[in-house]
Length: 365
Image (tube, rainbow, N blue to C red; front, side, top):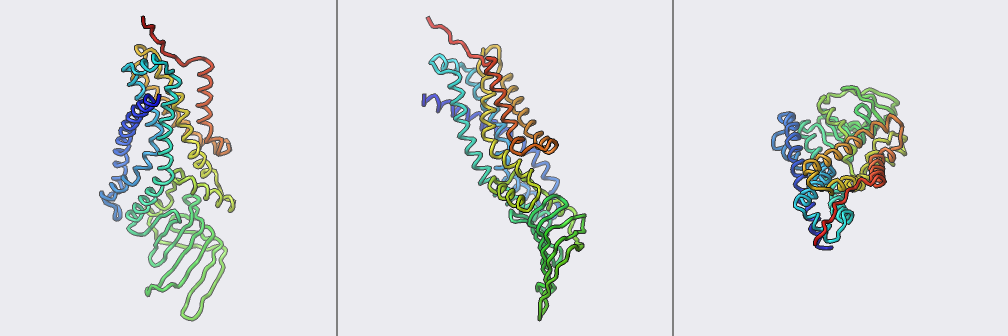
C-alpha cells in the first residue's frame, strides 16, 4: 500500500503543480498589466514592477492554491481513471474510499507547506514589496512597514501607527525640523480625522524645543494642513488585513479590543486563515467521489467542469460571507466557518442518498 500511496501522491502532485502554474501564469499576466499603470509615476520603473511581482509571488501562490488543489486533484485522478489505473487498483482490493483517503493525505502535506508559506514567507515579502513600491511611487515621500507608516511633508516627518479607515488614523506622531536639521517641535495625537490635505488632530500633546527651554502643551482639537499628494494619500490608506500573519492579526485584535475599536474585519481574516486548510481538504472530499464511476459515461472534461464549479461556488461563498456577516451582525468565527459547514452538510447528504458511485469490479474467469 505504501507504493500505491507514493504513486498517487506523485500523480496528484504533478497535476496540482501544473494547475497552479497555469493559474499563476494567467494571474501574472493580469497583475502585470495592472501594474503597468503605475510605471512612470514617481520613481517607479518597469524593473520595479517586475521586482514587485516576484516578491508578491508567494502571496499569489497562497491565494490560488485552494483552487489549484481542487482542480489538480480532480484532473490527476481523472487521468488515472482514463488509463484504467483506478480500475486496476480497485481490482486489487483497494476501495475507492481508501484511494480518496490517500489522496487527501497527500494533499494535506501540500496544505501544510502552503500554510507555512502564508504565515512566515508571504507576509514578509509582501511587506517588503509594498514598502518599496510605496516609496518609489511617492518619490520617497512615504515608507510603509508593519510598525506603521512614515510620511514626509517638507521638513515635517509623520508616523501613523495604524489606519482605522481611509479617513481615520490612530497614533499620529509629528516631528518638525528647521533648516539646520534641528528638531523644533514634536507632537503625538491619539487620533486624526482626514479630509484631503486637512487633518483634524484630537488629544494632542505637543512639545516645542528652543535653545534654552522646552514647552509642553495639550491641545484637545487642532487642524493641521499639509501638502501630501493625493496619490500618496491613496497609497497610505491601502490595507489588506487578510494578508497579515495570523499572529499579527491576533495582536491587532487584542490591541483594538483594549482600545474599544472595531475588530470584526480582523477577526474574520483571522478565523478564515485558521479554517482554510480544513476547508480545502473538505472540498476535496466532496469533489473526489465524482471521479469514480463508469468511465465511458463520464468524460474527463465533465470532471474538470465539476472541479471548476465546486471551486467557483466555494470562492463565491467565501467572498460573500464577510459582507453577510456585517449585514446580519454575525459572529466572525461563525461567518468564517459557514463555507466549511456547508461542505460538511453536502458530504452528509451525499452519503445519506448513496450518491457515491462505485465502479464494479469485472469478474475474471
